[in-house]
Image 1 (spheres, helix red, strand yellow):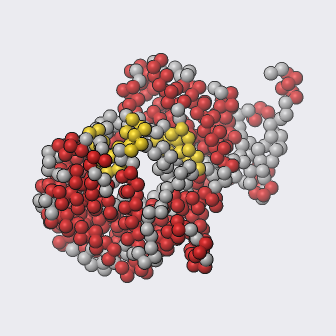
Image 2 (image 1 turned 60 degrees about the vertical axis):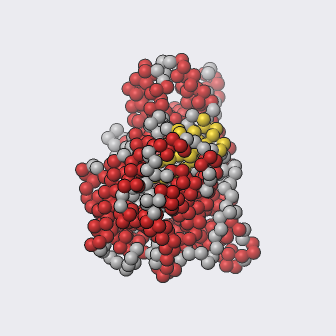
Image 3 (image 1 turned 90 degrees about the horizontal axis):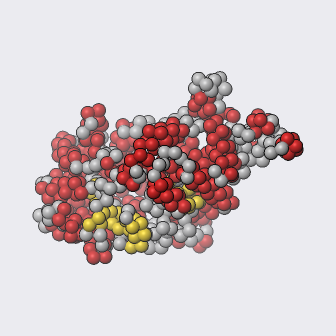
Length: 613
């Protein structure tokens, strides 16, 4: 650029008020002036959103504690609320999303009461479900009445242990009709070696502590003691909903059930092992699955009852953990009926506790949230009812959320940012020195060229017309119907073309994800708002906030989540360079992302993307 053209160039301006700034700093920082922050939001071009100096702690020098300097005042003004184990911008935005959904549900409730003819069938289901979830008085009066059919099935399963076909059918029905999964769990997912086709997945399960390590680590003994007491108390509550302490009988029973779970857990993979894409891919036929358990458990009858499909229509399956399924066959066939009955009832009450009376809700809270997570106070009823409604009718509520709160103009801006980051990463993949193999580079570039993006909400909404919700239903009955509906939808995907329009998060969820089998990144509507995204903010702000999330999904989830595959696929020299050169820098960078680093990183990322680097 000549001296003349440099001199004649318009000076950079503040993105919120268009005041000129010095060119020397404009090349490196997104501007946010003090004057703009003191104006009412209606006077500023970006309506008071974007980066805020009010979140920073200027009493701390950035060279001494950059994180405190960047975020100190925000942390001071945002202590962890009593109903949560932790707090951050994701959580605060999640609360906003809940408040928005609460407004929608209040409007639906009014509509249902005052003008029922104008409400659609789907809207009515959402309104009725939330209304039932909020009716604490009715739930207290019902006790465990809604669980009785499930408890009877638990008893029948234990009694029929020696009749393999009937036993397996009972357990399959438990999974299909009630969403309760003793021993293991099933689902559907894209075949890892043929992502255009989906198959049935069989996963380790049957335990109610967070993972196998809780049964064996020495430092988890206090949690194990509390767990057994919680189990005993809930089994007591099934007999007496007013009980405050477990009976001696259920304490003894809980020890036996715990030992059963421990035997299952012993064959489970660790969290790390469970992420290995090779060890968790064991595709086989139903006949092969039957042979895994050496005929001790009738997996074929189980699957037919758990899916409503014949074994031939189910097709091939993937066992994520063969060792765990062998242990299932052994434990399921060798355990005595009395212990099995208690185990099935424990599985059932654990699954249903959040939807029952206060005694069950409180018992569950004391262990799973207070002891395991450190949460000091249970969330208000409306927030829990909201979560229940989202679990049952998530996309129906999401459709209403998008219609009311999602700005369609955000979609194009967000897509453009994703594409610019993708192009920037693609450009870097062509140049990075640690990628020594030509084949490695070609594979990486091929994957990036086919990278998919979903923004806002699904192109095809889930059809809830077959889900029957009636006002006369007990709330737990509604929950069971919703679970059966979800299981039916899951079964449809087994041995079928992969549904590439499907979303694994609802639009009102504040999060994002990368799907390795489908090679796509997904941003729901609710995350496309301040502080993660603002369509009216300076580009550098969005590249630093949403761009950081996009970069995380494209790099960490694209490579590190599939790390074992990465090691096997890429040449040894490439792997060593990545592990010892690039990966530490990635981790260091991710741990350093703060409000202020967005100023620099966002501007530089934007400039490189614009240049096509």
